[in-house]
Image 1 (cartoon, rainbow, N blue to C red):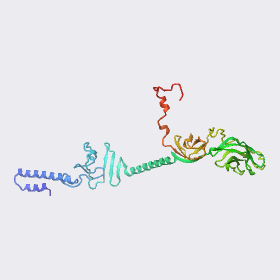
Image 2 (cartoon, helix red, strand yellow):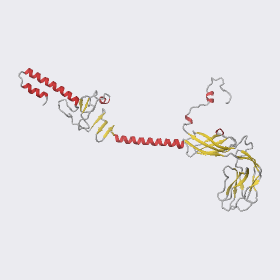
Image 3 (tube, rainbow, N blue to C red):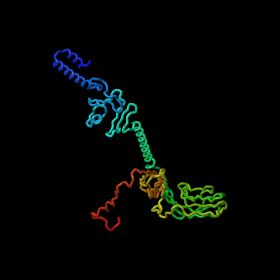
Image 4 (tube, rainbow, N blue to C red):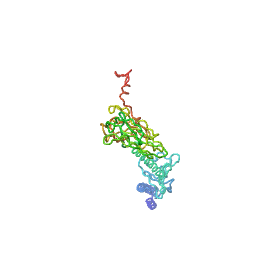
Length: 385
């Protein structure tokens, strides 16, 4: 029995209506204060003294206690001053009543902004969190794939490296080739060649004997000079199917085309091409056609805005270092290196970098800055740089 009922039973036994009514009023005040204190301690304690939710809990209209006030919606429907701001900004606590399965927050038009259900989980804007997590994982995988592609491009495309060897040899003078007309041989007149970074005297001589050739198609072989005990010797590719090329490092002078079924000693029908190697009469002081090499790239680049660095590992003959190498042509699938030295057998290690586009960098040329300043007393008005 509540305090109010006890006091009423006592008051009914007391004579004097005025005193009895005063006692009843005091009991009512005490009951209200007791319920107010109980409400602070237990959110499920109702203002009328009962216990439990006033409205049956459901996901659409749960009973929630906010700042000591029990409401039928969160935030309270239609109350602009008691909004979600109460919960999020002011730190008020909202408790779902016993048996409630969740809550929903709508916008002014009744559209769901946020829902929570004990079974389905959290929804934001009507989308379940698992769906959002799936989308987030998919996005993360896409970003990881993009990052992996960037790493691959950095390691295999935008940065490449390798080694190559530049051979710098040819003729200085003399060394005219001809077919001897006997014993299936070719000959060379006396002359001077450059090989291994120095000049060599070439004595007049005949080549080795070419083997008989019985195939139905023509054959092309190389005529070349190679060093044997410090003396240049005329070599000729063997007349076998597929032909024979000059050894690496030798001077490739010309090519000899042998006709089909060539068995005669005079090499009838055979033709010597024009000279293939350069002829540099002023070697080593100057050369008209510097040695060059096209370096192939394993991975094709999207443009030619790249930088190449060199390291000379070894060379033969004249001094040679990185200053004697220059990139004279850039392509997306290769670049051409030109040697400006008299050395031979130059072994080079190279590294290509395409980390920043040249076109994105500001121009920093002293000539353009100089010409762009007419106030300069030395401003060139009628003369070339």
